[in-house]
View (cartoon, rainbow, N blue to C red):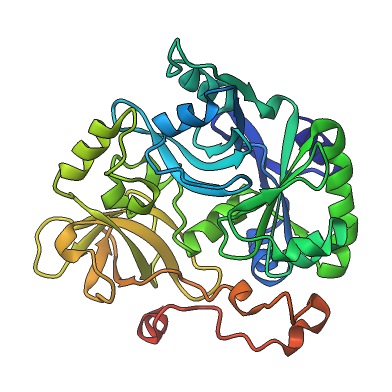
Length: 388
């Protein structure tokens, strides 16, 4: 990929393979990268995000026919959803973006070639639909952080400050800017041809110096998703669970008639075995770790996503917990790995007070950030903090 090749030539970085695609894992320390996402601006190469154009006379009806969410949306607007297959498995975590009479699908959880192959098999003989994997010609760049809007306004147009969340526009014929993100802070995605991607990356680096811009890899972005309980198809999404159990029912509609509606309704009809719940502990949490409750013999849940808490004390995670126990505010759960036992509390996400909630683009700027009154970054209850 043009952008990744440029980034690798510019500096030595760690990379990771996501859905068969190599992407930057880290540019430096995760602490520094997360601090930039939370405090200034972070620049990321999103090479692992699948970009697919669905075009043709029947493009709108085709996507609507396979999408589990109602797509009543105006041009240049976006909706989040998940695509499922005939077995009820999650194919992709997706932004569905309407561009006139066509759609652009931005997906995680699947490679571009595999997604095009899956879509192609669903096109009816009577439908006029063409598919293009834009990853062959386009690169995707992300800016996240409470002052990313200010950098975007410098590079493109001051009016970008008013771009609503889940919308996009074309600053030029070949470039698309999406107002989207999963870090809890202001976020933008910029799709540019491979031939322009390196120049735009360098421009953002140069212009971003006055905003203390830091390059952030996949691990930092994924961690910030955890802090805000954004659905991660590679973590909790890999756990065989229904939308109700994963608490992503807002991304689907059980009233809609679509290709796999019967499968979705069957998933809803199953009694929930567990429900995703945010947890905090002074002791390390790790994936596949069991949770226990005082007075119960067996485990009541399993940790599916976890990390050391970088914005506060202790460790945070998401656990699939049995329904009677999957409630916030419980402080009598624990882990037990055979050698030591650690207390675990269930809490209400997000784990942080995102800085962007308190930054007003009409009033503030990066140069006067010291005058902005921010609450404490950590939202974990004081009792849990004392334990940590």
